[in-house]
Image (cartoon, rainbow, N blue to C red; front, top):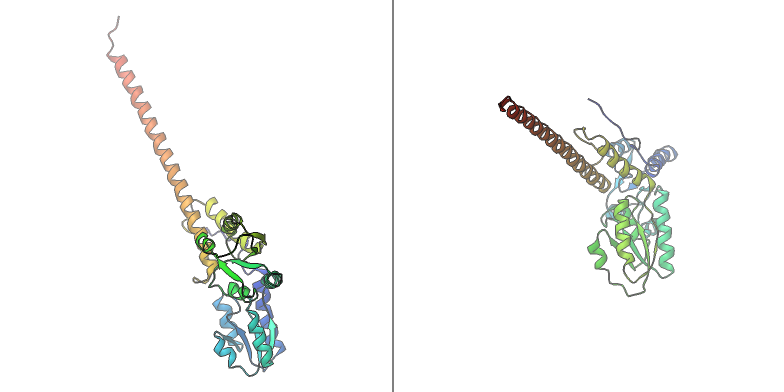
Length: 281
């Protein structure tokens, strides 16, 4: 069996940085309780290994509120500003492992919000990264992930709007939604904050599926419920459908060619038969 491995497979920069940060803190704070607020990344094997080394995952704000001491590591997806504020009030040590690209979005939306712009985040409203970004955008903020969400925005004509994106959102869909927003009578500034690693992975998944039309399947080694996995799964399905259509078209052309060959042969045989039946003079 031949297996084709994507060149971009593996941890991206932000994820690798976050994981390394936790292992560094294990060494630096030996004997102290260490926590991550939410899973540090979407990878169960890594989470299990960290738990074996004494790192506990805080999954709710109630668990966070109950802390009296220790080190809390902010996950790669980032968190809302108020989480930092609450931990600082408690005097808990904070180690920020937020992906620098996500942190950049936090700074953007906070700055643009302070300048009076309404913030529109293109992304999945239930994704932890988007929840974190929203928590830095002030009160005037909306999350959209499709055309219907955009139509439901209740903004005045000429409203100053800043548009950003979840770093792992589909690049082509982001462009489509931006065009819809541009058609509105808003004063908008658009910042494409999709991570290059995301675009590269989505593009390669599509390319591999399209170039290997004889492949029986495309497999994504990732946590099934992860939003990014779902996005790449859609890319995979679309690519497999395209490959199937291309193969069906090739089969149709081959069948048509064979049918034409048989018809030509029948005509040739018929012509010979007619010639054979003609009287000799």
